[in-house]
Image (cartoon, rainbow over all chains, first blue to last red; front, side, top):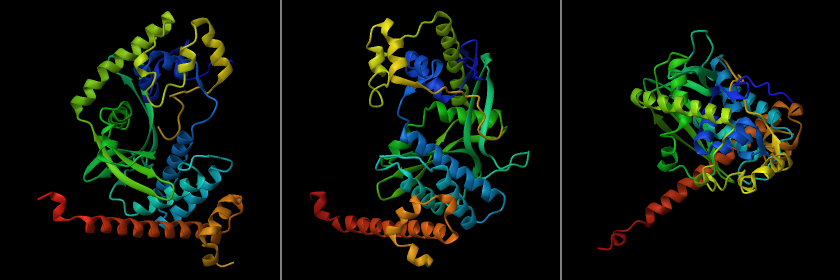
Length: 300
Length: 64
């Protein structure tokens, strides 16, 4: 089947997002299998599904509020939308499952019913929720950096990109430390500044700890100074050019130090086979789910 | 069935199992109501736990 992804040209990725950049930095071989070839484990991640449903629900709610619905009306419509969206979704996970998703949505929306963070309205009159962004990487003008952000809102007199995360982990200060430095948060800040021309100061993360019988929420921040943003751009240009040189040479080095990160790389059993056997293992044990960073999800 | 009757915790799973397009307004209200009641119960339990932990603090804990 031909690769029709918008973010690739002649088999080489020119539009990058935090997922592909983070994977490439973690291990070029993992990036090659996941992004270039599009291999993924057969089981869909319940964490990924839970996160997507949660994002969709919050987006739905913020759009409803932006057009004038009050909290109760918007919340009830959001619950209905989420129940419809999750029909047929099954999860055996004791934390991230359908009832706990609906609970998390209702508890979060009630918790932030009188949210001091106010979603801004863009110059096109639309609320700044679920925004797709893209910009040229300054030192690599043939490449784009792109992504999707949840919303831009004013908080304590400044503008921030807001992002939602869900976790089983307790939300101590250390939880938020992981977002600085962090490709995704730096990219969001740049996207807000460059694509939407808003003086955003960084990202505010609304994190939900999803327990068996409760959902707890903590708001944390990942500020970015202009110096930090500038500093991030040069190595990003370096990495995307390096990936192109790897693709042209069909050379995908393995970073062994990454093999056991995050409970073990999903391709560990493939990389442990001899080179000529690897493709057969990939075809047999994995499914193709092509990732296309340029696929637009919301407004641009 | 009244909204209050539907708000029984045991009925929440039954409501989740229904075709969401066939949920009545009172069904949806019952879901939200029960989830809010769960939140209140959890907050009270959390508050109780925090108080209990505070009571435990004693000068002898300082080892003086």
